[in-house]
Image 1: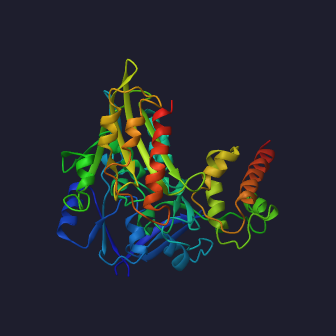
Image 2: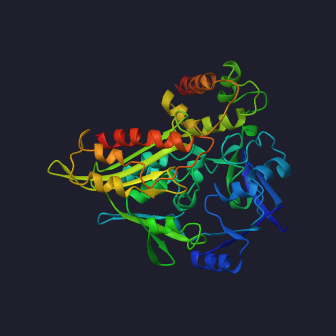
Image 3: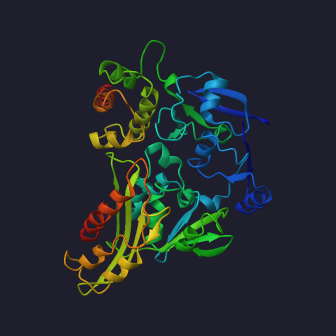
Amino acid sequence: MGLGLKTFPTLAAAGEALAASATARYLGGGTLVVRSANEGDVRFDTYVTASEQALTDITVADGRATIGAGVTMARIVREPALGFLAPVAKAVGGAAIRNMATVGGNLFAPVPYGDFAVALLALDANLDIDGQPVAASTFLAGRDTTHARALVRSVSFALPVDGTFKFAKASRIRPKGVSVVTIAAVVEERAGTISSARIAYGCMADRPIRAPAVEMALVGKARTAEGIAAALAVATEGTTPPTDAIASAWYRSEVLPVHLKRLLLSA
Amino acid sequence: MKKVPVQFTLNGEDKAEFVESGATLLKALREKIGDTSVKAGCQQGTCGSCAVIVDGELRLSCLTLAERCDGAAIETTGGLAHGEVLHPLQRAFNEGFATQCGFCTPGMIMAAKALLDGNPQPSREDVVEAISGNICRCTGYEPIIQAILAAARANSLSAA
């Protein structure tokens, strides 16, 4: 069965069309929704999309970055001002996928996908939904309910201090594959001890999650093997990892502390 | 389903077709235009066998809507050879035994072309990265990597 495509000049108009039809889906880069259609998902019959320029804008000013939801992973890789995010964007698929997959779409990507959303969570990003700022953590918690049909215009976050953002994705295929576990962290240090930490996991629940127990255990400690030991001991607290073709829940729980340790101790 | 007109250039030739609204570029190329060099593999964006170049960027035609390519310049493996003269990548794949069953080959070659168009002298790492979205179940990848590096060397020799 063919599906109709409706393109609107603004995101607001696309939102109205989406609200008017329960069988319409928003089309970003196509890597999620066209895939669903190809797999025989008959719950929708119409693609809705917007051509608004702001969706593909990147603004970096006054220590803050704002990225349009339609910006692709390839654009992130090429953007010099977002160099710290290049390894994250490069971790998403091969070259063709990166030319298509968008920042906005990644927020909706089901486990085991959504590596970029893990980074946004660690960066404590805000999303612009209907002109209102919504914390990435709030959005992700309600992704299947209150925000299931939300249209994200952009994401914004404070640029991390140089060297404080860390990212790791473990997969079973080189150079890249689907995630076993993904970790993003923003760890700030002052006078030899950790002053603040934001740790986010991918593939340790059905969506990206923060690790508050780890964050609390890190603050006030030195970023050494001894200093992070208590944090590693609670690394899996609050996690409910999935079992899928990539890894079992048990395996993910076993390897998470290993990858977290390597990440936290990395330069 | 509503039919919509789509115009683009395919390997330098103007094409105009009516396609079903919401049809993928893969379907339009294979079933409307008749370019079966583009392979329908997983149709999930995983295997890369449907990869084509749209306006200079590698894309998966199985996940790209034909309507969104209106006015675009599309390149496929079907347009690489000039008569009997193969493209350097095709020649290198042939000579290096980089194709066995052949199903992944068009996508691999387009991924390689997208790489060499932007980076004529890639490193082995660049090549591995460029084909990391393409799956081959026959060759073990090494002959493909070597063929792409050989094509790059051949290009640099012919340019010298």
